[in-house]
Length: 327
Image 1 (cartoon, rainbow, N blue to C red):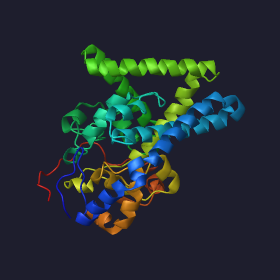
Image 2 (cartoon, helix red, strand yellow; image 1 turned 60 degrees about the vertical axis):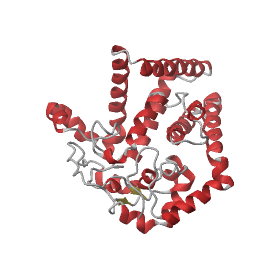
Image 3 (cartoon, one colour; image 1 turned 180 degrees about the horizontal axis):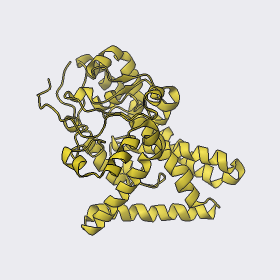
């Protein structure tokens, strides 16, 4: 194996041959044009707005199911935009992900926290990793018993679907309030732009006769819950950063919805590789990747469902990391 620690903006190749292979792929039409991502953008926006515009014809229930899919898919697209696709220009990519089709998160705040999450040496470490589900000992000790029970429920598969989105929403709105109280101008601007755009979408929904309340409760919340399927035990605390991200050999439905992020260990090694390249790279080096991440492999999300339907994963106090230099 070659390379050093994978971090924000860096790639960690298995060997020089893989590096050369990826560089060759980057010169070919598919990767240079980013055609799959452009088609994805067209499909999501066309599908989302067309479904809303013609929901009377489609029917409320089928339209709701379609909107859940397109909204969850849009959140996967936002992740792809953050990682530099389909263009080399972050501001241009941001334009394709700023509309609050999923309601809750300003794109800029998601981008900033997610790029911090990609500092692999700090992956899963509370505070250092904004997307960590772990807590410091000090934070855990301050929790009341009822708060610990809520976290216990959240750490079951069912709780991650039903409760975790609500906890995320509460935390997000709390951060918005804090930004205005503390006069964090950059975050305030993001929230103001987000709110204006969201208000515009809600006005248009009312214009086509679709209830914004129904959209929030029956579309946006379930779509957010779908993303929690992917993030369930997506990372674990481990001394070796390479062992902290899962490989989930999920079925085609989840691969499409999550844009192959089920191959999460590969994504953290190669954050710049487009979504349509991850699966092939994994399959070409399947045994090596499974050895590389210390066997942190799961055979589809159904395995997590069966194993942790009502049993909590042990994601509470972070166990700490032995600071050893990784070769």
